[in-house]
Length: 461
Picture: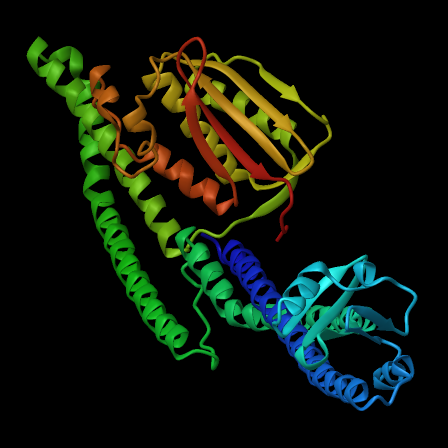
């Protein structure tokens, strides 16, 4: 998983977690506030009801009279209503009948002799209904406390809590993403360096950072590993270069001797002539191997520098095909051009010719010849393909065909043993130097097609 994908996933998960946690806390806060306010209101109504019940009972027993006026005085605010049942007669300051104003469960339990307090919704209103039995006067006292105003306040509180939750959540998301981004920046940089090294740029190193000792330790170990790898690669490249150089002198002498023997072939017997032919082929193969090894060693050591030119890729392809055809004496199909005929591409001419020569040479030597040559241009890249007439490359060989010295079982099945296994390795090395890619696929109805993709943008030296 890339660091950007990891950042997005962690950001999404942390955002969901933050929203869930802050939302839960906001709900708990609102429920807690609502419960406290309702409990206080219910307790206050119950206390007021006991006081009112005592006043009503005392008023009746002492014969003070004017009970409606007393009930009006008992109401502490416009939200409360008092009603009393005295010797079977209802006394109230409201015109509503008790059946309409007092919830049925409260009336029934109170008339049955139980102190009752109930918070409920009745006739479209939220209220606290309290009933106190008055056994001394064969009656009951009821207090109704309307909670509509309290519910309005609770809605305001809910709005304030929701606004606070929104502000806290958004602020938390911003801060969390900033912290997450700052924590992942070193990982993104390290990931970019690792990708660059994996693609062959061994000059890249992970810069140390003061934000994390773990990342610093990782950077130190990774840089040491790359340094060791570069040292080993340079040692191997020097060794291959030195060996190849040392082989050139005796190889030149050996080639000259083989050519002299070949010049006197008509003086030799048949067996000796065959031996001379075999010697010439082996010397030629050996010479090609040494040349390829020297070229690869120079690429590994970075001795060969790019000489980039902005060229018309269609014309360059045609010229290279004509040159290869004349030089090697092979007949090649006409190049098929697709796209802007004036399109340019920034390439190294020598490397491009080397790549195309190797691909065409492989097709001619090992795959029955070239069946098609294509150039296709779009806004960002140039796609060049070489299709052959061979039996195709086996799936197990296709993944490793560009490895050094790997020729695949199919090469031996064709009866050919003259290849060195370095041609396609050189192709890939040159293509990578040109910031391109090279792949191979099956071609219909037969053979394989090698596709070279080069970026159209570059820097001309």
